[in-house]
Length: 273
Ligand code: A3P
Image 1: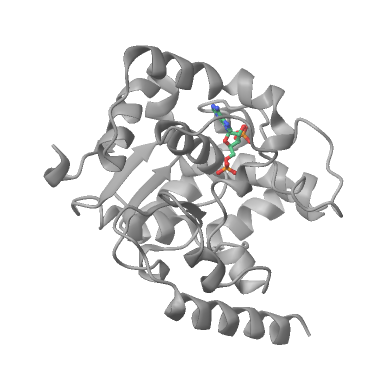
Image 2: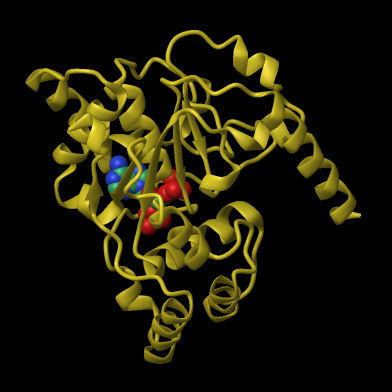
């Protein structure tokens, strides 16, 4: 039954995608889940002059594919959006509309696996062990497929003029260069006080305090999820405490089979330099 439903969703999405017209100032933020997508949604929104007045981030930076696939919105409704549009997505480049600008955020896959495991438990009812979950992660059998393929697909686009690739780890170390890269991509100028405001509003502590504005389960009134599960721990390298040595080795091996080399940390579009 689920595959029938899925087939309908895919068909609905493909139909609406064909009707959707990207604008040159559209920004599509993509990522493999749990890589810092929501953080980027907020950063791009603030860089483009937005404020924290929304009840939920999806009001100002909608998830591109999900409401289309579920029939909750249409390309015609997207066409009625005024001002520069920013969308969040988890799609590979090939499935996004052409003609906009793109931001891809990636994170160490082992930390993604740990974060996604917690998310599967808190939000998706997964009851298995980390070991079982990790096997699915390596096989690419989770909701959004293979992390390895996702990252290597986007990595191939990193040199394109309209693609900005950022890493979660670099953002954690120092978010300011990323802010300037985003400002260039969005063609806006940020004053030093505005930079400080954006950094304050988008810090981990600030986002955790306002978690209800970011957890997409909260945008759907039917879901009740414990607080602290979405903007969870925000650590770099948590996998060191979680993955066993054989699990670390399997990661390296899968990485090699997929030919994924280290990603560039920050790539700027040549035409924006
Ligand atoms: P953890 O589960 O490791 O804490 P996504 O938005 O793609 O689902 O990513 C969620 C991950 O980003 C979570 O990781 C979350 O805590 C982290 N995150 C969200 N906002 C953050 C911020 N401002 N700074 C650092 N990490 C953040």
